[in-house]
Amino acid sequence: MQRQSGVLMPIFSLPNDYGIGSFGKESYKFVDFLADAGQKIWQILPLVQTGYGNSPYSSVSSESFNPYFISVDYLKELGLITNSEAKFAVMKTDGIDYGNLYAVRYPLLRKAFARFDKEDKSFKRCLKSKKFYDYALFMSIKYASGQKHFYEWEEGLRRREEKSIKKFAKDYSEEIIFWQFVQFIAEKEWLLLKKYANGKGISILGDMPYYVALDSVDVWLNPNLFKLDENFTPKKIAGVPPDYFSQTGQLWGNPVYDYVEHEKNGFSWWVNRIKKALSVYDYVRIDHFRAFDRYYEVDYGRENAIVGEWKDVPSENLFNTLHSAVDKTRIIAEDLGIIDDGVRNLLERVGYPGMKILSFAFNGEENNLYLPQNVCENSICYTGTHDNDTLLGLIKNASEWDKKNLKDGVSKSLELLGIEGCVEDDVSLAKSIISLGFNCKSKTFIIPLQDVLFKDTDFRINEPGTVKAQNWAVRFAKKDFKKQTANQLKMLAITSDRY
Image (cartoon, rainbow, N blue to C red; front, side, top):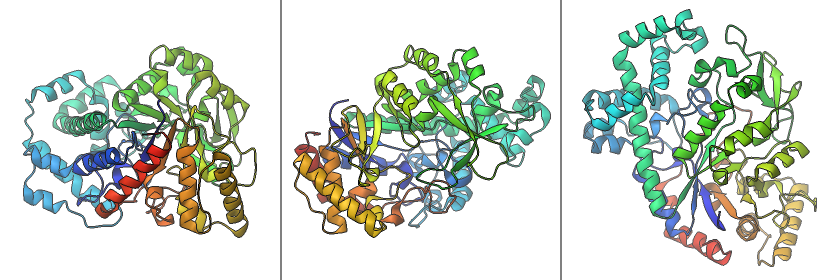
């Protein structure tokens, strides 16, 4: 990577009239905003179809596209829905009402499918390749079963017995084609958007969760790759022990990997998954990277993650195999959480840039690795991630002791980096932290749009360990994307040699 900067902005947070951001006109306008602002990276969150809790880190398929991201206007342009049907999909809400979206958007997609030319050559090629077939089969069985989890399906289907699958595929052939249509249209629209962004000099930094959901295509197809019993119930589930975010740890509920089985088949599942991610994004950030060294597992059924066990991963063999198949310079490691020598040594061996979070920097410790004067070139610096409070929210909610550490630390960093700045009021303090991020040694600096616009806690994307209506529901307004804001960002990029 060259020295550059960019903005973290989830697709779902983009403003439009249809209740959730999409791959449509609002995305193109945001690319234009980034180009005008002198930015080179658009970081997004996973594009996958979400499930319970609406988290993009829990999906029915790790390789899916979220059907909600298909633009209503795009369907109208293709002649698949009418103007009146598009108007019916309009939702005037500040946040995202996922329940209403579900009730409105899927019937709209089915109307579009009914009018779609199924003899379209590119679509027929897609069907022939079976690119989205397993996903479509999974979704079709799920709907036919009344939305049951796959491990609750009838025996033949949950165990993928050939006779049962063939019969279902024959009986529900049109439904299976519908779900392939959904993914076909979503991928097509996404790749058009990505091409436009790349043409404007903007690279897409995508995000790949480490774990997959239990009720997913991934587990249904490959149950042997996970620690499950004969009924597909997890023996162990994933999480993290008590840390900065939670006193009782985080219990994610995802099944953990059986690396003995992964090693037997040459880690092909991981290689294929990361290859797929790199075909969709320019760069990919691997979430929870520390789990490639050791991961934390908890007995299934426990109420919290206080009691668990760390397990080793055959990381050397895994990454040797991976790097023979993919371009390692396009991978970024989310090396946050409980980081020990094992993780640090692994990161050094693979050479991926790690993450430096300024929200964690100013705690009064001079050897804090997140301090802007301490970060290295081979890293990605952020003001915060999607799991953090916004920068202004962090400052406003800080205790008197924390606020003093913040001001003292920021003042010292400004002096050490030779940057002018003020720490007297909350907004000035936030501006100074942003300036430090732009001017630090990290090759790339990423700033969430919330921090660009100095939004407070109401615009926090996610609070880890909670299931709240506010999580994954933040949306911005069209008025937030002002020329003056773009000019200010561009000036910061120029003066910090990131333009």
